[in-house]
Image 1: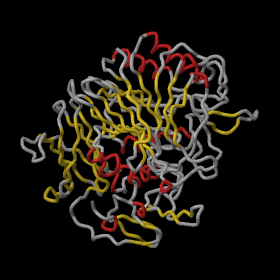
Image 2: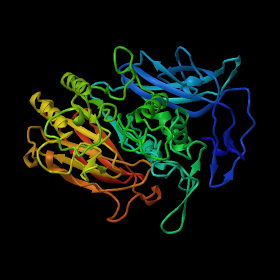
Image 3: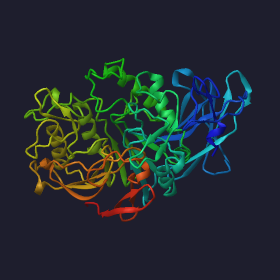
Length: 528
């Protein structure tokens, strides 16, 4: 990988990239680095990615350092014998010089190699050096599946630390060669400025790479884009994404902490107080930097979508932000606008997709957990407000729990087998078994929920469990009591690794730390 010093330059007024397109630069704790002089050839500014892989299609992504045309060819061999050329796509200011190309007609169960080049729009002879990515298409019957999941990147002011080798958890996941990676939300911390240095409790210094525009909360489209560019400065992440498709969803910090669509901010850091406006900008940046296929026949790209991955696995991605009502005390006894969480249109979509699924395992990728109490301050009457589904009461289903109860009852009534929920959000790792025999609401099939994160953020927890749906804590690893917001250097960074045996269909779930240690594991035998 290129050294950071080859790419960026520091000026008195701030960090400026080698080109106007990059629009930003790099400094490490006050030490500046001079870049090579600009050339006429366009360059890849932030690596390459593969996004959604669905059927015979995959989304391929790159960003240029200036207006340029992206040319891609793919092959089933590393030598690019019988290469297939894709229609070129231009990277222009309107998409922040990102470009996404859909490869179609891909063979099943194959390793795909793709080679990309930029061509200057004003000079067809000015062509970049090529970069090569790879990914696997969905497997055929009898083949095993392996994937990882986690969330929460560069949060609470903990950014890319060169002293610890950057975000090494991506290097650890890369060593497992997963078929894909589920980014379970908080892909960025738009509301989390990154400073050059943070003084730790013991007096030592945590150093961050910094980027102009990441020094404040994001409000403008450009500032939201900057947060994604910041994460992609990490060599480990870029190498991982060049080899592993990332299927992304969003949570709150892609916009700001604990947001809901009708919220009006009372926060002096923000000039724009309307969260709906901020969310519209943040979603544009999310879709620019997270390659996704259209989720509807009308060509609409959505956070909630369905990705089939061979006979053993279907993945259903939820959007727990766009449709929710306000955060309240969450104790309503009847459903209404103020109890909405997933929203009726999304629930109907999920029900249809689950009913139609023929895969052995149905993984529901949620950006928030079901049974953990996650607060959001207090209401005007002094009662606690709640950010997620649970309400801390441990009784019958109320508030947002009513919507989830209907969904769980549907899964039971339709006898939909082998649903597993994966999530992140709470910045520790845990395994929960939901048992109707121990629940207040009992009309559902038992199921597992696995939590893992953060990837590179402060560590917290553990949260208390709400008894409404009967969750049992089977495993947890979190900071010691009384400690919170521990930096990545403390070691409490986590991801999950799932393996599905192609012959037996047994799903093995491993909860792991950033060093690759297996903390806890379970084999789940599918219901016949």
